[in-house]
Length: 183
View 1 (cartoon, rainbow, N blue to C red):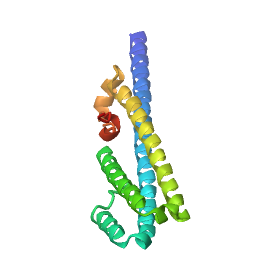
View 2: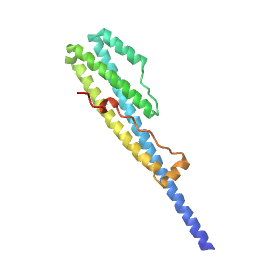
View 3: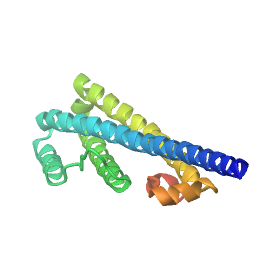
View 4: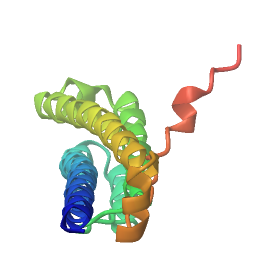
């Protein structure tokens, strides 16, 4: 009888320790996802600040166009929150891409602006932030893949469901960059 109790207690202890290990793995994966999403947000904020400074610089060359860009920026401030969602990050990215495109078009209209050293430095920093955002997005989606694998794979999925861990959404890919241009 005592041997049976010892075996049952040992099995329960092993299952408990396994469950704690799974829970810790899920928490760690979840925190990686949250961290990588916040990294994207930080890069987007930096890029937004660089765009705003570029608009100020462009104002010297093209008052009307710069005022229009300023109005767009003022009407659509980026969503900056402590815990951004994947949809918020995607929305910010679309807005920043739109603003960057408008600034590139503005520079094409004003060759003196393109020759300005401050403009060139600002454009370089925007491109750098864009690359950082792209890499951060890849890191986030990789983290989500690992997390979702942990949540969905049996037997860990049993613990994940009981503890309220659910799948995370991936960041959407930019459809304009995945479609081939028509020839």
